[in-house]
Image 1 (tube, rainbow, N blue to C red):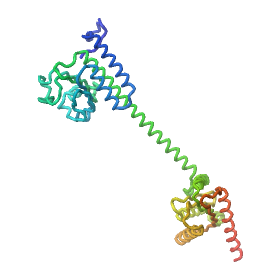
Image 2: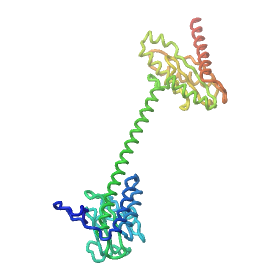
Image 3: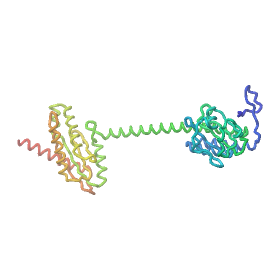
Image 4: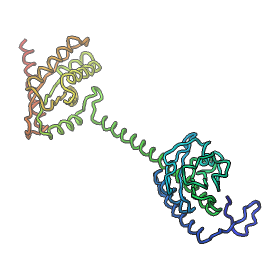
Length: 364
């Protein structure tokens, strides 16, 4: 194979320019090559590269068949072909046992003008095919990743102009494969970066709706979740809970113990309802529980809270007993109560219970 040089070049060591034997045919081939290179420059899919190569290779050389081969470890993988009769599409053969592998291993084109008379061809290798002559050029000369093979049904094979154009096509394929690799890496980086940003946004969002002390929803998070449930129109129970005597605990034992009491209350509330129900800390010593589509009356929710609270206090080694006041309201399915209405009603009921406890203590 010769490299094209300017006519009359006197560059030391340069290969003299050899004019095409058939200029008209050669320049038609150049047009085919130009179209193929242009198409390859825009492709981002290996399958598109294969389709472009097999078609262009036949058009450039006037061959009876063309194959696009990729190196797969120690094997040649015949990934695609365009031929008058089927050849080896889909097959994998050792690099050392085929001409395509030889072109890759030796990093140079291989021309076989008669498969029956060339000792590089294994005896009988092409007996089952139409192939009587062939040419193979490696894709990427310094470290071939594949090869382009063209095949004829008669001895002879390509001329020098055909090989020159085929080698240029292989160069373009090498660039296209590298571009696809780089583009794929960039897409993967963008995907990973987008995933990182999405996670960061989700983490920020989670922090914005989560109470730091208890891990429950904060007021904002609870309102958002509760309003979504109310919008579904399936009915719910809403409990407003206040921790009794928190100020006295803080004054007597300190805020660390008070914070522990808040966290304990959060655990009791979370364990008293289903996972599908929502629990939130509204601020300070106030909590809310919303039971979705309740299966039992409000009194059952109150009993569940009391039972869980009593169980906790029996087992807890804490310095003080956990006590709560509760107000519960029920929203019927299809009702038009707003969340603020329900919160106000439940808060009022909770305050009544707390006041009743206070009056009972004062009488005793």
